[in-house]
Image (cartoon, each protein chain N blue to C red):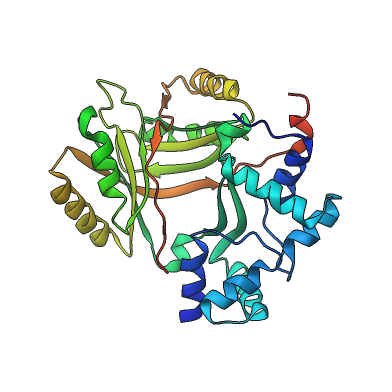
Length: 164
Length: 147
């Protein structure tokens, strides 16, 4: 596994809150890190290839796009069918996340988690019904959110990392 | 938000160019000009339609820990438990959901080890069992939000 070096860590910290909205954002960042623009772009490319940067782009506040209802839908899928069903779900545009997670038997039997958004609850329920029919019907539940108490992303601090 | 904003949001979910003038490249693909792309992004950020424009990191590959955990909280203790859980700086999101498992939170920690510690501390302070549900596999989704 690729281990980021000290310059990578600086870069990770500098860009975490976003890229500058200027004509040459990488040149501007390179100057701050005492690198050339070419070297900086190569480093970002490397962080993407090694999977440290999963995605480079935008983070959307989905409620402002009109997706007001959010349901975490959990499924109990037989282990041998899990990969097929998981891949099947990703084709639907209202599925915004799809993860396999561990069961905790007997209290929790669900192993596939999907986030389904819609303009309202009715639409979420309809979407889930479509998913269920097309995947062959499996036990599932919709956990609607009632309240969000806290939302802030993870934050990376370069200084603390240099000890490791 | 007009059609050009929507096109921009949909396009940028597929990634962002790594080159000298990335906004120019985006502009060309969408039939806009560079200044317009920058201004539209600025505006979408100000309106908080976009919360961020930058990288999403893979926490585990940075040595950190990331997990989803759930609690079954009785109605009369809900506020008390919320206060305890949210006091941990490692709790990144916390949602109340309609289910017997009614509190769902994401832990993001600097080390993998810290996940185990935080869970133990929450169990100790609340007297409740924390159901740890780390991601085992992710099924990739391209365009997450159609604007």
